[in-house]
Structures are given as C-alpha cells and as structure tokens.
Amino acid sequence: DAGITQSPRYKITETGRQVTLMCHQTWSHSYMFWYRQDLGHGLRLIYYSAAADITDKGEVPDGYVVSRSKTENFPLTLESATRSQTSVYFCASTSVAGVGYNEQFFGPGTRLTVL
Amino acid sequence: AQSVTQPDIHITVSEGASLELRCNYSYGATPYLFWYVQSPGQGLQLLLKYFSGDTLVQGIKGFEAEFKRSQSSFNLRKPSVHWSDAAEYFCAVGGGNNDMRFGAGTRLTVKP
Image (cartoon, rainbow over the protein chains, first blue to last red):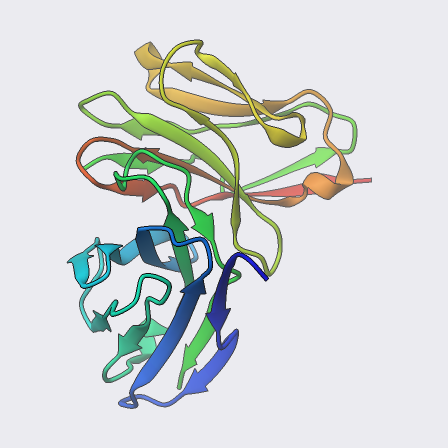
C-alpha cells in the first residue's frame, strides 16, 4: 500500500542496547524526518534528510544516528538506549523542498520503552 | 529559532458546542502556520495551513483558523463539535530557516 510505514509499532528494550526503528515511504518524497513525542513537549525534531545520503541534525539529535542510503528508507538508530529515550517516535516525509514550508505526512508511530 | 505556545493542555466541550483552540507563535520573519490533528494511536494529519493571503483559512472536517499578525496568533475554530473530533491538536510554525516547531498540543475531550 502507498504511504509511510514504521516498524516495529511497539518495542521494549533495555538500557545500553542498540535499537533501530525503521521508516519506509512509497511516495518517493525527497525529505524525511524523525520526531519524538513526549508529554508536555509536543513533537521535537531529531534528524531530517533532504535526499539520499544527506542528513542533518534537528533540535534533539544526541544519542541518535540516522542513515539514508535509499530515498524510501530512513532508519533511526539508538546506539546505546537510555531511559530518557522512552518516547513515541514518528517518521514523516514531504515532497517539496524546505523543512519549514510544507505539509508533512506522518507515519503511525513507534512506541519505544527503555527499561 | 521559532517557537509555539498552546496555552491549553486539555479542553472539554459538549457535543454541538463551538470550539476555539489557541496558538501563539514567535518568529521574526513571515511564518508558515499549520494545524495538525492526532487521533489516538495515529500519526498526525494536516487540518489546514496558512502561508499568505486571506487570514482566515478553511481546512478539512469543518475547521478554520485565523491568522492575526498583531497578536502572533493562529487560533483554530469549529462552530459545532462532533464526538469524532476528540483528539490531540498541534499547532506548528515553520519558515525559511529550515526549521519546523510544534506546540505541546491541546487534548480535546467531547462530552455527549
């Protein structure tokens, strides 16, 4: 089906483990984003990518790594998970240049719990 | 960087009543303003956006918002709320600095 998907939808892990959250979109959108959603903070941008092999930091990048070898995929890795990274993670994409200008299309989210 | 304030964390309205959700932004240049809705367990969906022109913008599901530059506000309104409108609502501001900031959200409860 066309759209933006995330996997897994739910994940429980332990402190210190590496975790990778997957994001896949079928629209060939050039821009992709990772946000975390926390109570009282709304959505905060972790990383974004303007195209394959081009990534940049957002507001809260520490502790996260991204890559984008293919346009349609944008995985987010927590190299050594901490309890403060317990959150709901959303992937989003948009087709037009300019992070600040355009509607973003969101995936359903991944709820990550770090014990 | 720009910022967004949604003063109301939680609002409860009766079905059929009117609704206004507040959003105040801070940005030194021309803002690009958005309202998104998040239903439980779902991602965000765009309700409406303002870039320029008419300061009253219409969106999906009967929502509208008014941009008031003098008040740095972009409040969301609906004349008659339906039970299906219960959700979390996010205001966002973007612009030419390659950044988009979201507010903390307002949770809407609809009483029967």
